[in-house]
Length: 310
Ligand code: SF4
Figure 1 (cartoon, rainbow, N blue to C red):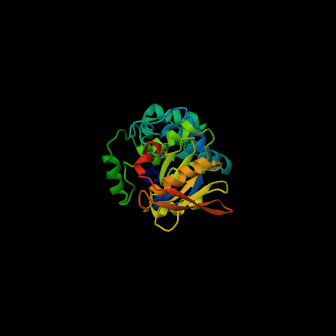
Figure 2 (figure 1 turned 180 degrees about the horizontal axis):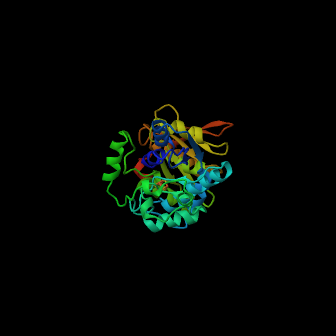
Figure 3 (figure 1 turned 90 degrees about the vertical axis):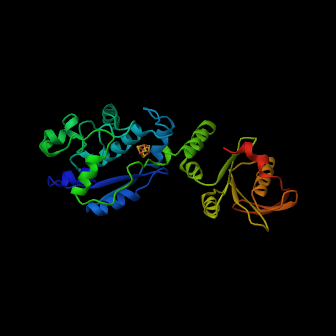
């Protein structure tokens, strides 16, 4: 928001661009664009981001966050639009030294190179500390009116926000879902056990408990009502939906191609997480997109399945 304000002060017309993947969305950018009065493009980069995530050139941060490669992918995507539609340059709100991984001075240089648009990326908040960019050289931006902010303190940015009358801005500490330790552990496990991963697999990671059955197949068991609903939405025709009949309990999704033995274990797990009384028999509904059948299992304590939890 501050970078935009600095350029608007120079009479430069801007279009916002923000990105969407299963790990982060456009909500705060939407709010910011409305407040700034600029148009906003939302570009879904889920598939290319996932491909990059498997093996980022500059590695991961503390968890599964490949921040340098992630920034580079965003800048590259914006760069393609810049070229195709005749925009003059790109600008970001990055500040030298603000983040340990992605905003070190050398990391900014790496982002420039990796994106394929070195020289076209202006960082108005730190421009005075960085090499002169093409738009500055071309006189499209007055370098003298840009800033030299660096470091982790946000005092100068906060003072600038007051100057511009910006009171409502996102929390400075926020990272995306890839910086969440629990989610990162699940994703790491998915990468290490499954060769082909698509966006649906990643979406599933956000819901319920995940168990790896002895034969290696993944079972997702809803924790709350919203998980149960979402798991049904995310099920593909080849998947199996499992639910206890007659008593309250979770909905579970067993990934497609399961054997009879796997279905039986999955049904037992679902019964264990339901309100059915331990030691009694529970009736379980096992559904594909075509049929539903019932089977009976003896309810075991859920602790017996703990070692399958991912
Ligand atoms: S925190 Fe997430 S969204 Fe932000 S740069 Fe890192 S990986 Fe990308």
